Figure 1: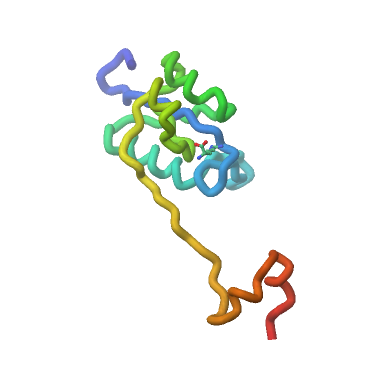
Figure 2: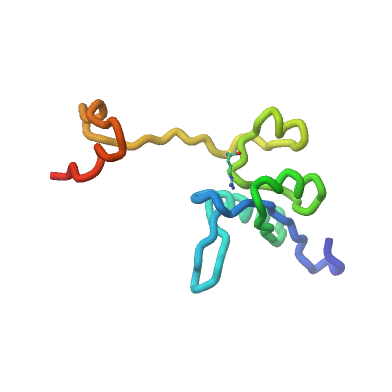
Length: 123
Ligand code: ARG
């Protein structure tokens, strides 16, 4: 879109900003702002296209519908590609795999049976 050629193309991201650290609301200089890992990816895509990024924040359950009805141009929202979803939308390659764990001292892992076992144990 855009009437003059000098105008930047606008690309619209659909996201559900309730999922830190991927997309969430944060007050920055007193202003409600949507930030996160996914938002940085969206910004990089927009920059790469020389486009202006507009963010449409909505219910997670409405994202696929918004994409299908052209309300948004793309969706980044911590979305897992499932067979069911693949029936209606195309997914890119996976951009993030998580494999992270809590660390404890050697030998202490067997002593940890619940979250309570982690508290008050410092020397
Ligand atoms: N990965 C899960 C899924 O695809 C949860 C994603 C939730 N994302 C969000 N922005 N609330 O269903």
